[in-house]
Image (cartoon, rainbow over all chains, first blue to last red; front, side, top):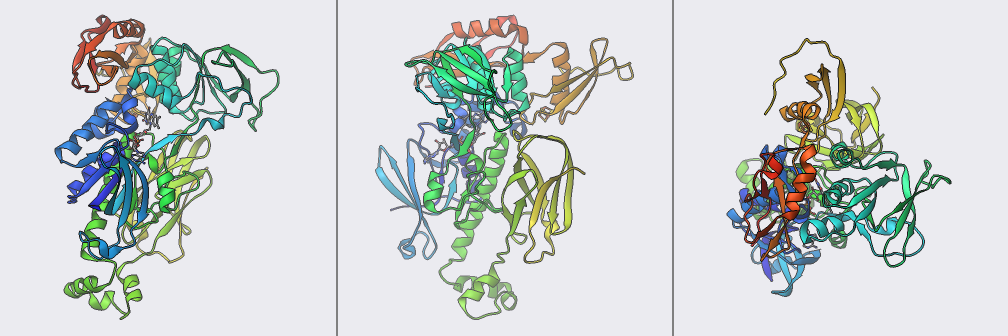
Length: 469
Length: 131
Ligand SMILES: Cc1cc2nc3c(=O)[nH]c(=O)nc-3n(C[C@H](O)[C@H](O)[C@H](O)COP(=O)(O)OP(=O)(O)OC[C@H]3O[C@@H](n4cnc5c(N)ncnc54)[C@H](O)[C@@H]3O)c2cc1C
Ligand code: SF4
């Protein structure tokens, strides 16, 4: 079986940044597995500008941003295999069989490609960087035919920007997520007439900037609280009926608007791509659908890390790269530490502790179990999202192992004006920051400092919520 | 290109609320105008926000991104961008020129494919490489 220290699944911006950072932190044997025929992930089809302003102080398009990282991967001679689909990840059972890393826990990654067919890699650590995919169109609950001319916004984006194929001439878009907004402009520029963007919710899930530059610039109407109630046409879409909905999302009689069109785009949001994580047994967060990770971006399975859109959907690719660099660094620490301290027995740790002169403190007991508990301080504080905060990434931190600062990112569940984001530890308020406006379309963040958690009681939790004052 | 605001203190006759499109943070901007010229910008996080607000109330510009047909390459089209903002009113003419353009592979990232598009003095550059 092929052996590696680190396998990265997905060669998008997250996978590439994680690989670069792991190499810079001393990991030699890295391999990136990517199912597409190029690196870059979804950025290859995001040809608009607005990427990388914060990383490179320069406004790039998606493909240019991807190219910056691809060049780094090549400079550092990091191995990558394209057109290689990972099919399974499982925890290795036969630890002794590993001669590269004797006596340590390992992970088996199974993949297929044209050169090797089915193959397996035994690795010390894995970084999940599979990105996200579009919500399936089953979300569209309309009886009747499914004529040609209905596309997800991401598929249309790929068809137009990568294949050079225009899917239609008169278009209605359902869903005002960013990809839908961006596609409204793209199709208009390419000569199509975009009649309307309809959004079921009373607010748009997309960024305000995209509403300005993609819809308002081109006088494309945005109909909030509207949905598709009928699709006409058997072979090909011939028309669409939109209607206004009430607070419960039920169409209101007498509010129908008819459109003659040949194309319907669905932009119903993105979901982290976690089929693999699920089969591997990684614990997922219910709300995001992504792995639950701690402040080191490690999942519930030791040695398995995650970053980028596989965790939760990011607005800014810059944040994806930043998070992925951390994942690469923490994976590198994990690998290095595992080399020094095999989990199989505590002998090496004991020797080290003896050398450090810390033996007495760290090893109060003689038997293996207590030894482990003493050497690694495993206290993890859970972060509880409350009162408008839907979820957080990470969802726990370790006061002992955390870096000096940890960025906690989250989304809110509705539109709020003039609220404070507050962070509590037990009853003590750690942070209180005002925001003029909070919307579900925009990711928020707070920075937790290690110094906040000097003295923590065992059952205390961190709470992040929204407050009026 | 960054105009400086030297007319602080003039009476503010009009306020305009904008959203900065410089990056996905989308800072909410307020521009105070006097006699049609901007006198103050508020709400921006970085310098780019101020530049954007001034441009937007005087001569709005956009970076234009699209695709150009390629012959003899590994794909049918290549992504491109204008190397500077083009006035909003010129976008339809720019798109005409982009649609009329075909290039031969190979193309390097940053290659100029159209010079001085629609007389705007911006060029059109490839944002991807193609063999
Ligand atoms: C359709 C779509 C359009 C988007 N448009 C925009 C936009 O316009 N602007 C914006 O800022 N953000 C956009 N995003 C968000 C964008 O994805 C992120 O900013 C960023 O690209 C996330 O990087 P990533 O590396 O986490 O994921 P991705 O870029 O999605 O990369 C994940 C990679 O993993 C690979 N992969 C997945 N599963 C496997 C497997 N089993 N085996 C091997 N490889 C695998 C995929 O092929 C892919 O290359 C879009 C997302 C989608 C899905
Ligand atoms: S002001 Fe700066 S940070 Fe804010 S949206 Fe504009 S470019 Fe981005």
